[in-house]
Amino acid sequence: MDPIKVGVIGCGYWGPNLIRNFVELSTSDVLAVADLREERLAHIKCRYPNITTTQDYRDLFHMPVDAVAVTTPPATHFSIALDCLQHDRHVLVEKPLTLSSHDAQDLIEVAETRGLTLMVGHTFEYNPAVQRLKEIIESGELGKVLYVDSARLNLGLFQRDLNVLWDLAPHDLSILRYILGRDPISVRAQGAANIFKGKYDIVYLTLQFPDDILAHVHVSWLDPRKIRCITVVGSQKMVVYDDVEALEKIKIYDKGVEAPPYTDTFGDFQCSYRYGDVLIPNIRFVEPLRLECQHFLDCIANRAKPQSCGRVGLEVVKVLEMAERSLQNGGGKEMILVEDRNGRERATA
Ligand SMILES: NC(=O)c1ccc[n+]([C@@H]2O[C@H](COP(=O)([O-])OP(=O)(O)OC[C@H]3O[C@@H](n4cnc5c(N)ncnc54)[C@H](O)[C@@H]3O)[C@@H](O)[C@H]2O)c1
Image 1 (spheres, rainbow, N blue to C red):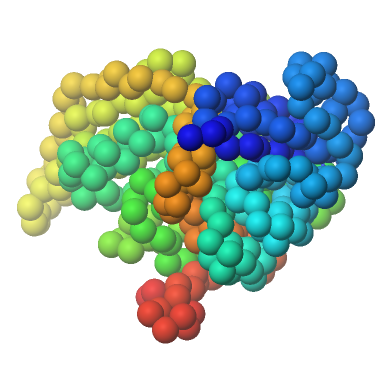
Image 2 (image 1 turned 120 degrees about the vertical axis):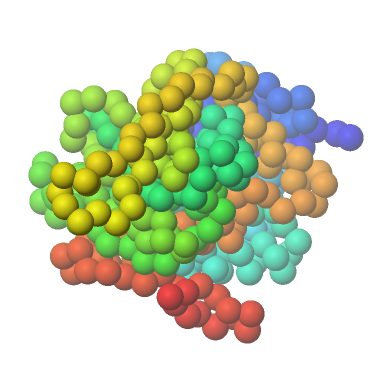
């Protein structure tokens, strides 16, 4: 089969990583790259002289490009992705899919009507360590999942046109729904705008998942350390996934606590703590973005639904919208609506 011809729109910080992967994969050829900034195009031309560059992404529609990756700022995702779908191109859109669930729904409908692949760049769903974490949870080794804590902190990078919720939390929300295999029921969000007026740079999310699973997400552009850590506490064992660790990304702790049976006196109140071994699984690491790009190409070739399809992108955008609403109303609880079989939206609880 001939390689799939790819165009990349947006080559600022993240776009060149997609270009490199699509260039290196044997099942794709990068035909063209578009960016508004001439200096970014010059940078790409210098590295890849055979790639056509243009400041107007619509030039791609006059080329034999089969698929497009949209790596422009989130506020432009909807209009550019829609234009590409309407010109019958398969589309991979960076996270978050759009800035509103209404827009995400529109993209899904256009892609479905035209039989095109629509995928969102939830890169962590293609991360072998996250995939292992999901397997560990699904194996039942941890017992019942009690709660999950996620922290994604660093100094910067401050974004111009969106707050830290929309910039970083798509990663945590996509990981949580992926590893738990279910969508949250409700969200509360609180945050602070410390550096730029009105722009939240730290946000705390509290999410309620079905089966009494509580999750907490802390995202920050204002922290002295780079932290990307998820802790899953189960009734039998506990696991820590630290993405900053080079090799030992996952550690399974055989630790737990058992409450005493009914006690009459404080003196009888003794929990029994278990301090067992720590297991570090060997995970063969492949660049997650490489796996994501390969998956996009495979889905186009096989007319298969991507793991992070448009609907998955929509579910994450819905939670972000409700979290934003909660932020604006001082941390109130917002229910997350799901579609029933008749396409009507209702709360799950
Ligand atoms: N999956 C990940 O881990 C990950 C990591 C970083 C960024 N991202 C996502 O990638 C996207 C881009 O982020 P970034 O940090 O590279 O931003 P950036 O600002 O560095 O780059 C965006 C580029 O898009 C160009 N652009 C804007 N409008 C355009 C248009 N109409 N036509 C052509 N080019 C246009 C800009 O000139 C700029 O060069 C965002 O959606 C972001 O959330 C994802």
